[in-house]
Image (cartoon, rainbow, N blue to C red; front, side, top):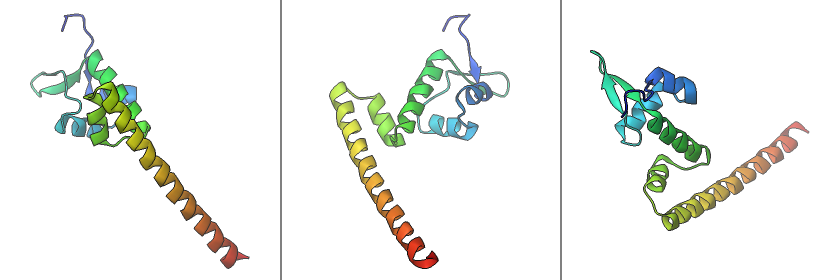
Length: 116
């Protein structure tokens, strides 16, 4: 790490990404995103640009429906392994969509029967 490299506190990372402190601490606990360093007498966690970029990748995967374990697998996988993971996630999401649509149809049917 160079002297000029920007370091971010937990509060700054939270503000930039919208991720809660609790989530950052959880990602650290499970080894998904570790702080770059700890500074000061209170040993505050700080993150560098690389950590910020990694967090943005993690968030992108999470927004695409990947579980924490799937995110961890994708980050550490080859292109073919990533493809397999993406296909499994897509299959799971499509199944969830179908189930959700069935639930909506059932609710609409109940509403029609009971409120008509």
